[in-house]
Amino acid sequence: MKEFDYVTAGSVLLTPRTVGLLTAIGEAKGRLSVQAEVRPDALRTLVEVARIQSTSASNRIEGIATSDKRLNALVAEKVAPRNRDEEGIAGYRDVLTAIHDNHDYIPLTSNVILQLHRDLFRHTPLAFGGRFKDGDNVIVERDAQGNKRVRFAPPSALITPELVDRACKACNEAIRGGAINPLLATFMFIFDFTCIHPFNDGNGRMSRLLTLLLLYRNGYDVGKYISIEHLIEQSKESYYEALAASTRGWLDNANDYGPFVDYMLGIVLAAYRELDDRFAGLMGGPVRVLGRLTKEQRIAALLERTLRPVSKADVLNEQPDVSVSTVERTLKGLLDDGKIEKLGAGRGTRYVWKR
Image 1 (spheres, rainbow, N blue to C red):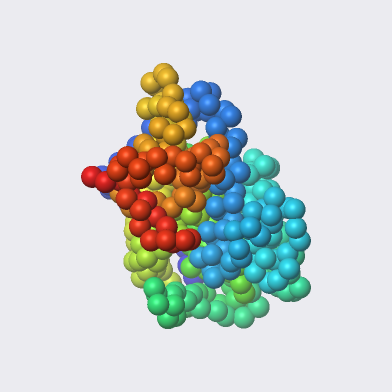
Image 2 (image 1 turned 90 degrees about the horizontal axis):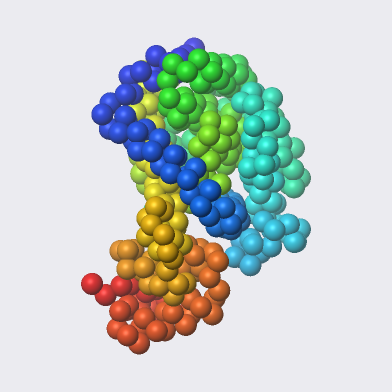
């Protein structure tokens, strides 16, 4: 039977790399407290952007999507879902909102996980929402060409309820006892949850929602402002590689949590650093520096510090308080001045800083 001892397993994870990631995250967490006092209005704006990105990215990882216009309307609850994909998006929106608003009152238990899963499928006609799987399943991964292969065969459906219950209790005890950093317990639990694969459908989305729940409950709320799911989607290959590396030996209690834990710590740190960048743009430099850039200067600074080609939509996502007309006017001015280069045309248009 699979064992869950996050205190013992966590002590093995404290390599120089992991300790360095935890230290950097701790420092970034402290900076967020300062930033929240300096620009609470900016954080409120970022929340709405992150909710849209999170809902879109987490579903898109599973091949669930709709148009940008419909997505925005669904997240804003201005329209009702009109097909199976949109039903899934609406369910994710509901659970994400509940976690954002009420995380302190949502404990990690088997019953709560079932309730969240029920709500994830509340807009669908499917009957398995809120129930553990009723048959054995497999974890399948897709490559860049869309080809599928079986990566892992999870435990039997018969022992799934017991495994989930024991994993929840082990995580809660590890965090409550303070013997290890709560981030380590969080990501070891999320990895085990993924390996148990407790549902007929929705396992990936549930794992990301539970990640946010545990982060928020332990004071790491950067995911409210920068989409953790979006960062995972952007690094899907590394995500699947980390899962595969940590899966080996799992059924025999011989797996190494390190690759997956370090990957997730890297995602959290990337989220904090992206938030730092957004505040730097709003404040005209590091948070401690007084004075601000104009909106046009912030757009130019975003392009200058970004190595990859950037679309107009990327700029709007990064600078949510800037209007479309300001972005278009600024991009034209930068093109006319020869500071940026235009790549592609139409919806595929991207801009890159000339170096």
